[in-house]
Length: 221
Ligand SMILES: [Zn+2]
Image (cartoon, rainbow, N blue to C red; front, top):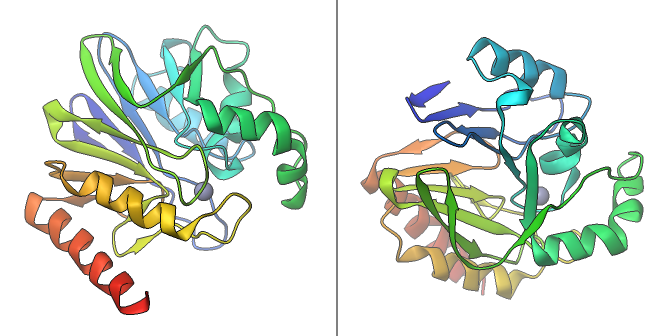
């Protein structure tokens, strides 16, 4: 699904099994965000090829966090020239607990590489500037990526259209998730690109979504 010439969304639409949405930033550097589960990746690879982006054209793969439904398919890029990255805490957790965590889901050990590690702050990819926001709560090394030029937010599993990420998995932290929502609340977002579920377009819709979720949370705490 082409959102704009420089942004493609690959939403996961199966209701039978879980996988993440994937996104491609196309430009001088092609950046692929959250490649998803490895066994579902051939479908995605076909779609990327059909859109003119074979695996060899991807320069950078970013995982929003270390959960297998978002990053297991980093394994498919090991033999390509793509660089791979995630937040430093996501890398640490994957290294220390990844094998156990993946085994809980019936998966083999994670196969990935972090060529460099992300921290909060600016990230230049080709001609584009991104802002990396460390937004723990769903997972310790969860990040959101803000793309100011498009006013787009890749929100990973922090924030969805109509919901937030679960906090009951290892490393989950409800107060941290609430603080992370506050952290992204000041951003000027017209396009919410979540890790699961539909993309949300329009500044008013995005704002209303966040306000609605925050008021629901306020009713619980
Ligand atoms: Zn997750």
